[in-house]
Image (tube, rainbow, N blue to C red; front, side):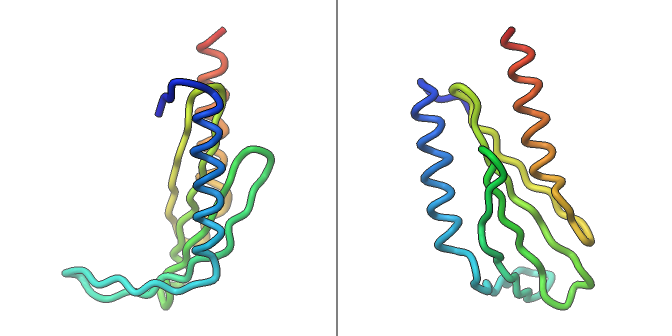
Length: 106
């Protein structure tokens, strides 16, 4: 998402990190037509300018999702990746998108 300024983009990421931090360490029950699920929301973390958070579905043999967000200039990048035994896939995607945006801007 493009914002009017780099400061506004960074503010979005900072606000999101604060909200993600508040949500860490909780379980969330989700009901949908296919069944009921409990997701464990892990604590948010950061690696440089990228914030991340993992949610793991209980009793799903390791199915989990990583959520990542970062900004560069006035661009905010948000990604999500889900898999069995997810690693840093969402973080990697966000970093690659930022790298491409920087190269395209040159």
